[in-house]
Length: 183
Image 1: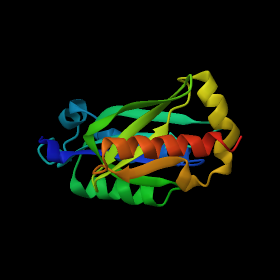
Image 2: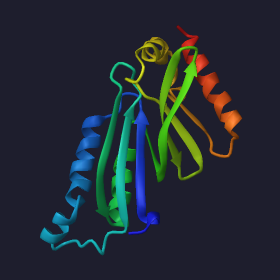
Image 3: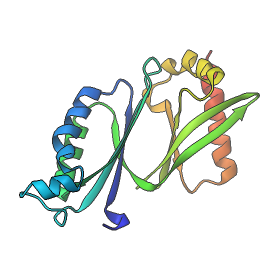
Image 4: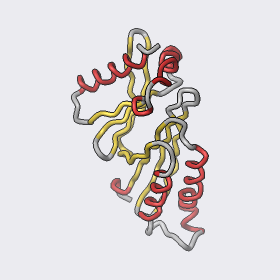
């Protein structure tokens, strides 16, 4: 399969419906997990698959932050992918297609405290930045005190990938400042 056929879905929000997301993944994608399926199931073949799907979920509820990454690759047809995306669209949260080759980790310091983030690039050309709990105890403490006051749309940062490095740094510093000044 080519890189164009790889699909990376990032699902995020507050109090995601993890049970139903797991059910969708198990029922709609898991049967198409790997070559074993294609050898055993005569209804599908790897040649029919038109997409390789991977999934990342992030619950932005500070009381139960979760970052679930499914490293599995699911070989599905376009119809199966669309069915899965439709099922996700009925659940709480945002579910966006991201570039599977553009993701990473980002750090920013405020004084002696280091804030850690996960970074993804949507197919529409914007970056999504999510605070990553568990990397710095002091940063976690500051974020946990205030993030519940932020509306869901402010618990992550989204910006164009066309912004300069200096502008990106300023946006991130302002976001951290806003979150830590609510304490």
